[in-house]
Amino acid sequence: MKSAVPWILIVALLGGGFFLYSANKDKDAQIAKLTQDTADVDGLRKENDELKKQSVTPDEVARLRKDNEEVLKLRNEVQRLRGENKELNSQLASQLAAAQAQGARAQQAKQEAEKLAAENAAMVSQAANTKIDNDLVCIKHLRVIDAAKQVWALENKKSPTDVPTADDLAPYLPKDAPISCPAGGTYSINAVNQPPTCSVPGHELK
Image 1 (cartoon, rainbow, N blue to C red):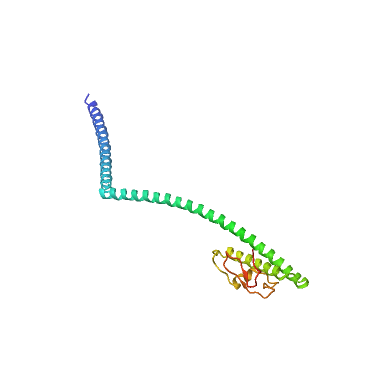
Image 2 (image 1 turned 90 degrees about the horizontal axis):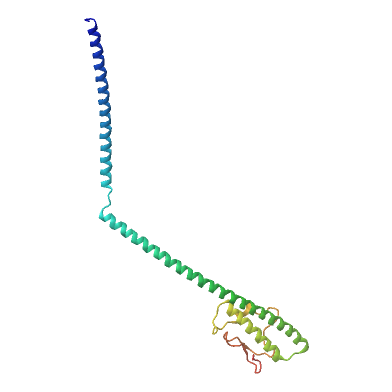
């Protein structure tokens, strides 16, 4: 029996040592967990401190409200400008249509002036051979001058009371036939809304 005691003692010591080792291991694990928990708590405290620093102050709230009001004003201004732009586009479209119509009238008047000029040139040529009555030739000249005056007014946007000069009408008169009274009369161009006249009695546009 004496020889068995040491073995029991050894087993007991080994069991106690293993228990102590297991206990120490558990404590180490608990210590590590507590250390990690402490670090997590410290991290949360730091984050909380940062959030406190980043909290919105009353002045910041007032500034944000003011910014929001400015945004609303800008939106209203954009809507107003869009409305004005739409109206302006409509006006421009109307003006363009009017300009196109005026251009068409100017082109028509120009064609009429060219037609009258051609007829005048033919009449001048015929008058030289057949001695057509001077009254008719002069009246034809007055028509050419009046047509040129109307084209000048349309293309240069003149008012009815404007009076062109001979130089103003030169580009609109025929260059292959003289525009002068065959009886030696003097022409007066007059205003746009008035027919041209000749100093010779009876030489006038009706």
